Length: 508
Image 1 (cartoon, rainbow, N blue to C red):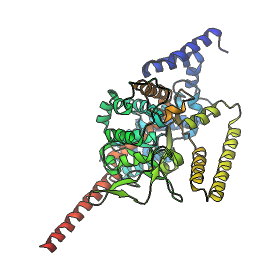
Image 2: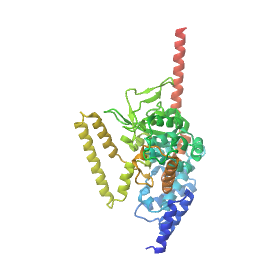
Image 3: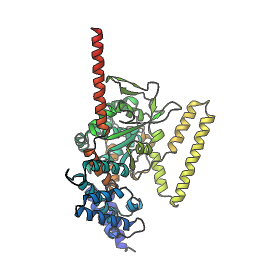
């Protein structure tokens, strides 16, 4: 039982953490908070019913001994026996929610030992007992088994500037995943990450260069009662100033980041699409973002544009129109898992509807099992409602389409493994689609940064191994999307050249 003075100290530290000016200060306050609350001692106590501490300790000692004895073959064999993100239950959310900073030291020790072992194997000389082929085979299989981390940026209207603060923090502390998805407002910031190199992003994010095109020049009249909505012309001009006119293929080749943009079909009997360098390499990123931002009833549906085989711009699926990606698949976790082997999700969630659901569940005084039952029942009810709309509202297509979109929005899952959410719980509806002042944008960006700080250590621990595997595979593998695309493009260019030469011969 804590004394009154300790409770007062914890209260003061909570306040200091909320108003911290930077992550360094926040971290210091958080560690001090854990020390006073007794959770710092909890971190060093290995024994717990929440995870298999004996299994993790045994593996740490074995890997460390093999590495120190330079038994490279034995080390590789031991790593092959098990390398996954939830070793001994170390990925359980409860282990990261108790303390303000970090988790059990045993888990951190295990992650560090795995990273050291992977680095050791990857740097072995060609003359070692472990062949280059064995290393390459192991790292590719280990990367596939362990999986990737993805950042998913939700739809949020004008509140999407919150994502910028999240991105700035993850980028600054080198925890930005290579797999990134975005829908609606989130699509804008996903596109920025996918079309600018690390060097360019360092300059852009450090100097707040994005604030000017995002602001849309309304500071001169910030006190009016009714805000102007962002119209399609303003949105198009903003996207043209922010996003280079390149394809998903070209964006991947430039940055190495695998961005995906969610779009929803405007026509009936069509399915939503996830636009990226795998599914739609020749589609223009900016075009997909414009479609993903096309809120039904606010912006007109969008026709996608792409490059043809000759590098010319032409419509992509010209008979189709697309709208806001958040309508059907705000967080495309299943598709990212299938395309990129993702099994760990960081969600930057600023969707007002999702926030209402998440924060409501957070304060529901009922067991988790009951919450799951309620959630399942709600999904089944919504599914029934959607079927009813499809069957009985055929003669009223506009109403039926609106109802189907409504059910789709409510039935989605808006959470990930790590959820970064704003401090606010309610937002004025006029702000969601309205133009914001510079001060309002800066406040959202700052809130994004502060909301990310409490999650940084969990992200570091849970994604450190996958980042190391990604790094090693990129250095060792001869098979990746980037090289395939370049090869394909060269092949296409040769084919075009050959065709032109033949045509020239015929003409002459």
